[in-house]
Length: 114
Length: 113
Image (cartoon, rainbow over all chains, first blue to last red; front, side, top):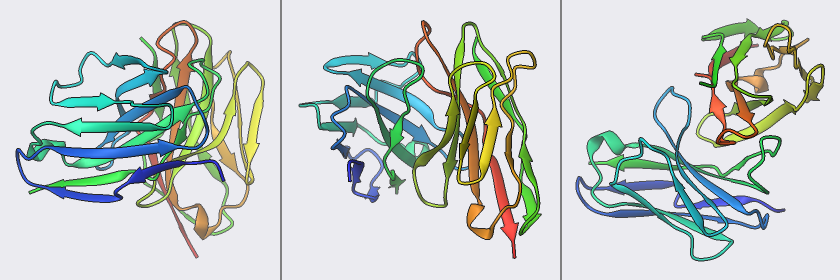
């Protein structure tokens, strides 16, 4: 089945130690998104790629970076994780960047910062 | 700006009860409307969507109708099951804006046997 895969499902890191989260998709979608979701809150969009074009949200901290080496893969890099970065990180894809398109979400990576 | 206001929970129902979760929106343009569901420890799944006024989205017994006159997209189900226990998010996306999803705060539903 075509799907969005996130690895690992659970990630533990230390305060200030860089961490990378991975997302892959078999849908061949043009757009890939990264969201941060804290406990009992709605997902918050960090950035997205439209093909190779990176689009950052205005309030995304510089501590968060992303790479998309090819259509299938996208990475979220947290350069110096703080305690406040502990959250669920969700990757999503959509075929195109139009309002009627459905976004397909992966299962998420839960990040713990010690 | 664009925003979604949805009924805050938590909502607790008995099995086979009728469910309504209210959702209203404000949009600068013509939005598409979505309901996503999140089961414990998982990502979001699309439950249903509607892309123009008076459209009815439906899936797994859930329904919602796009009401432009009342700017609403209320979620309903006639008879809930224990397996429907989850968090439900109403969301919109506006063409010509950022096309990004704007979520409501989510409503946690618990269905007891």
